[in-house]
Length: 164
Ligand code: SME
Image (tube, rainbow, N blue to C red):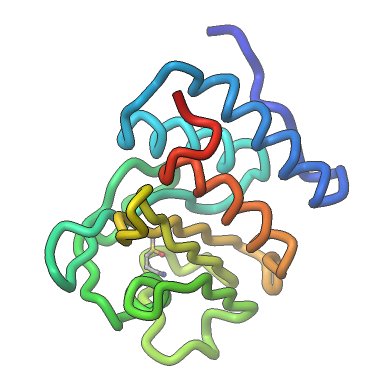
């Protein structure tokens, strides 16, 4: 496919996420497959914003996350609920924004270049937690409430919003 991933870095975040959301819904039209959704979202979010690491950790046990589709350098394989930023977001079922990873107790450093991070929980249509989306940046304070809002909206695809 010759399509170039649109560069979203230089437009206001609300517009960037609206554009990204529309793009993802269009690309995923007719696809009813969580892994295909995770892979496609990882690619478009990652390259759209030129993040350091973008991907999913899937819930594979009562208290265990395991790496899923991602873009970036080698990620940790397993993360227990309650550990690191991902495990905290999973245990508390809420988005966690970390402006400076060095100040987050228990942060798991998969890549020493990571400076800030956001983790967004992913729920299915029944409200069960199925994964978390983890994004790392090589700059401090990259993520804020606008990122949380935009990414939470995109993650609602896994609950059936805009899907089918
Ligand atoms: N930093 C994450 C671990 C996953 S990687 O960064 C890809 C955390 O603290 O949960």
